[in-house]
Image (tube, rainbow, N blue to C red; front, side, top):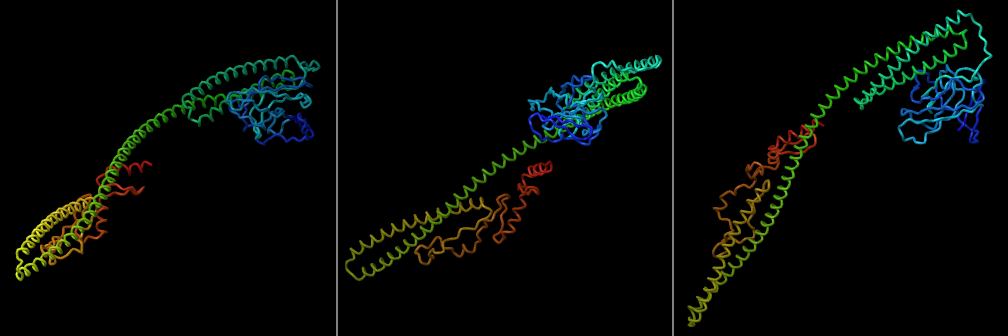
Length: 508
């Protein structure tokens, strides 16, 4: 901690208590008195005068409106100063032990007698922050002895009585102003309490309330300054008339200030009522919006649930489609296998028929007719067995063909459109088989057109075979609605869901 004193010739004397000879000047500014805030630091127990030659202790209170910092300082200024550069001496302000607390903090600082003024002018303490702004000022005081018996003032009795009468009148008027100011302070505090309870979130009013508090404290400082001037007028009767004129002017200014305070309080009351009404209307509007948002949320939940159900159904349908396609492929393979087996059996029957014809020729030429007849019967029995197997195979082919048609029909209902299954190209013609090939197309069958399997899965509309993919896609687009904001797609049957979705985008 260091103390600096500015002498009359403009140079500085520095004293370092921690043995450091290098010290920066305190932060000051050229801001005038009207732009300072004197209510954030309050000086306590300030004497009217201090005895020269002794150390003095300065007591002050840090309110919750100021945050102390490392470069804050307390200076002694001569009364009548205009900027913070006009300090006489200063001390760095110590930081409180608990900076996180928002309560008021009592602090004290000691000025050494060596650096104190030696004249009997009026001085005052000022708390200056690290930006050079005054945050608090004390009442004026002097550096003089307790009794000054060597002062001799010669005046007439009439002047003394006149001055005493004027002083009495001024004291009485000052007392009335103090009472009026005290009453206004009480009213102001009550108004501030009502505003704090009613409008905690109205930050715009805090500046005006702070301004009123600062103005009240400035009035108190002005009254204390008047008290010091009145005490000095008793000691110096020669300048009493001039001081009385100044006091009258200041009293008139105080009256005007009190009237402006009263009008400001009335304006604050009207503004508080207006803000209460406006806050009530805003709360009602917020309630309506909350209800609308709740309804939209519930509707969105229903739409999401319906969408999940549709996705589940679509997944089940796709799984079923895969199963049907797999069954169709298996049936096609089985049909091809049976056709090949039927072809082999037909060739075997042709071979047996040729053998039977040869046997008949041999019977007509040889006498062993009995043995040949027996062999022919065996061949005929074998032929009947083969014929029975062929009939069974034909029945199985018909059944498989019917199942294949059913599977194709189910597959066409699940897909947008599908092509009919072609008959295997390697099947033998009917001319090569004894009983004909049931899978070979006859002229009558070729003459009949196969029914189309191109069918819309949404409206069940059947399309001809020669329809193009673009025409089919254009038809499918008529069943869907696209959101212009997020490209989400909705079915035509869910137009109400689509309208609610668009409304949600408009609210955003």
